[in-house]
Image 1 (cartoon, rainbow, N blue to C red):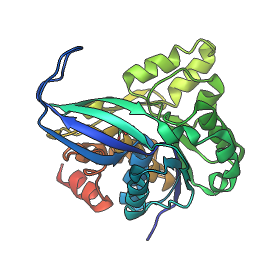
Image 2 (cartoon, rainbow, N blue to C red; image 1 turned 135 degrees about the vertical axis):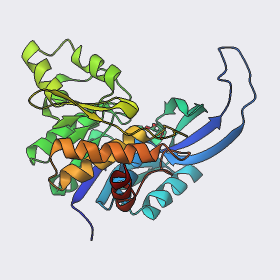
Image 3 (cartoon, helix red, strand yellow; image 1 turned 90 degrees about the vertical axis):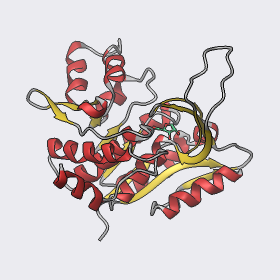
Image 4 (cartoon, rainbow, N blue to C red; image 1 turned 60 degrees about the horizontal axis):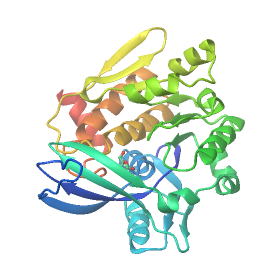
Length: 297
Ligand code: RIB
């Protein structure tokens, strides 16, 4: 049986992944070990993570009218994500991420392409699916004005929002104050709280809604007091998409009414499993896999 409705408003990229034992310095050429193209994008990854965990997921996004666009759309549909609200933008390239993978860690350059065509007008035209959602997931690989309007409309319809502030950039304070949960890593949280527009009181409000991801260590939450929800140690093959799996799984759990602490434990387990395979989406677990993993640990 499908769970409650999750709407992801965000990016869809093709990941161009190079594996190498040596990461080149500026001006240096090195020989890599392998190359592959695989669907990614923070928005699409979060949508797939939630769908694999059994949620009813709809994605609002854009792809280009190129071969990558067709492949990305097909992949989302194969993963059970509703793609009716994804626009194919004429004469645009699909978003890509150039990823260098070395010893399980990565560095990424994103070229947004068609993702930048997810305009505030497109968000406004889709207010109905915002109003119908049980929870909304947002990241920062689409125009900030569109993220801001999405949060405003979600707040108008009392729909909770998880904002994953990645890649980090300076954000209007209303956006931070209206989001229900914010899921930065430590560096992103520091940058958010340095936002000069926030008063001391507002900065504290923003901190209270943060769920700070710390890799395999777990996540920090601030309910009555600061608390670390410990993560799981696994052998990491590729950490790409671990944060996205965390966000997708968190949305699934929260949409079922699970308390924040337990939702974070579940999302930590899903994220741990996701790093055991190559590619952002390949290692994302099913609900049964997460439950089995938690039971074993
Ligand atoms: O979070 C990982 C994702 O970031 C990759 O899939 C890549 O597309 C970039 O958007």
